[in-house]
Structures are given as C-alpha cells and as structure tokens.
Amino acid sequence: MENKDKSTQSDTNHKMLFNSDGFELFIKILSVSVTFILFIFKGILYVLPFFLETTPDEERRKKRRRNEISYYDDEGHAYTSDGRRLF
Image (cartoon, rainbow, N blue to C red):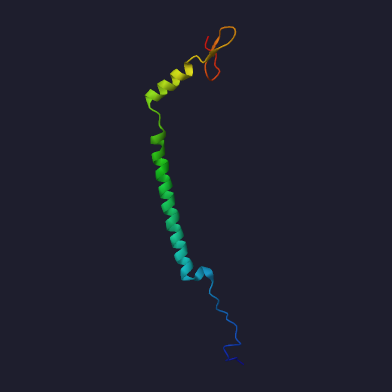
C-alpha cells in the first residue's frame, strides 16, 4: 500500500553539495584563481634573479672590502673585518 500524502513521506532525494551547480562554479573559480596566482608567482620567480644579480663592479668592491685591513692585534698581525689574518 502506497502512502499518497506527501507531507508524511520523507525526502529521499537530498541534493548533495558536490552535485550542485553552485559548488561546480565555486570549484571552477577556485581553480582559475589558483592557476592565476601560480602564474604570477612563477613570473616573479623568473624575474627576481635578474634584480638580485650582482655586477662585476660590485663583486670587485666586495672582494676589495673583504681584503681591507680592519684592525691589528698587539703583535702587529693584520686582520680583515671577517676575522681572517692577512700577514
């Protein structure tokens, strides 16, 4: 015997969140935004080394600065700023 009264029947056709059109749209928007963010991040990583690269003049200045005498000890030995002994 079938119950024809709709108010007493349970709703067995629940709409799942994963089957809804809104969730599908949300996933598409999320994937596009993540793809865009990754594209920007890769571009930054590609361009960043060009700005961080040192020129040969800077390398020479650093080497010269590294070999400059920073101080002398009591025995007359010369030391650089990083603590290396020169003489």
